[in-house]
Structures are given as C-alpha cells and as structure tokens.
Image 1 (cartoon, rainbow, N blue to C red):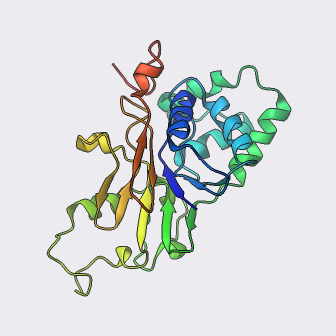
Image 2 (cartoon, one colour):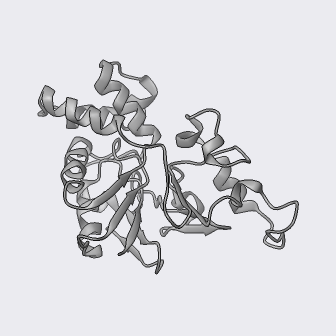
Length: 243
C-alpha cells in the first residue's frame, strides 16, 4: 500500500487530475490532502465535487485549511468575509454559480467533516499549517493555529542542524512525531518548486495558488509527482497572482 501527501490545490482541478494520472493511483493506496482545496483558480466547486466522488473509490483523508474554513462559513451563512473575497473567495463564489442548493449543502457537509489534523499508524502527523504547543498537536489550545500557524515551518527552517535530538535545546515540537507534513506556506517563497524538508517537517505546498505546481509525494519512497505550472493550465486567469 502506498500513501501520498497532496499539496494545496486552490481550485486547480486540471492540476489535480494531472497529478493523479501521474501517480497511477490504485485501490489500496491512501491520499492525504493537506488542505486549501478552494480559492484561486476557477474550479474550486468542481474540485470539491471531484474529491467527494474520488473518496467513494479511494481511501482519502482531507485535512482542513484556512481557505476551506472561509468557504465553509460562506456556504453555511452566505456571509462573505472581505479578506477571503480578496484572497480567492471571489473566484470560489463564481465557481458555484451552477451548483444547486442541495449540491452546496453536500459540499458544506464535506467541509464540516474534515479533520484539522491526522496522525497515521506510523506516527506521521498531517496538519495544514502547524502548531505551537510544545506538548504536541493534540494539546493545541486554539484550533485556528492548526490552519494559520507559520512558526512551525519557520522554526524547522532555522533550526541549527548541529543540535542533536537528545539535546535540551532541541525543539520539543519536533520530538512527538516521526515526520510532520504541512501545506499553507508555498515553497516557492523560498525559491523551491518542489516539496522541501527542514528537520523532520515536509512542506508539500509548491505554490499552486500562484505560479507554481501542484505536488504529491509518496511518503515511503519520497518520489514526487507534479502538475504543470498552474498559469499554463489556466492561461486566461490570474489565480491569486497580483500581476
């Protein structure tokens, strides 16, 4: 059985289909999606529908991201968060133009049932953004941290590699899990178009919301599967790019 972590999709259904075709997914495989399925490119609602149908055939885990929380709130109340609207919400609302009330209700249920984190049988943690509790993700006080935090990734990036895991100086957050998989902060911010590793943290978000690619990683072999750059797949759109 293979297990894959899939990065932030941000409405790029074409990229998702490309990646799944490259993986050649099999019935016994598991896909763990790192969150942020919506907001950016024009097919957010279509991505959600595709994932709902995919989960009926393949074992999937859908971690909830901050953009998913915004979309969930809109589906629940029709309230448009102005920050969300500016950061891809507009495109997501437009993607729902031809979806019925029942379909939207089904999508809302899908969002509501997403976990904020997942720990597998090998003690690998999957969380959209990060966590701050030195006692582990289960002890996080504010749930919003799990889909907004960037300090875990920043800490992992800047950790002195000379500090051994047995040292009292070694960050406690990193000790609880064999590996930690995140999205949320594009690796393209650090001039990398492939998933990055820092300490035992793997960042799978390779900037699909902007000018990067969608990535998936085989957790056992560390093989990487990627789509084309998203602007090439949606040449008449800007995604979340400002220029």
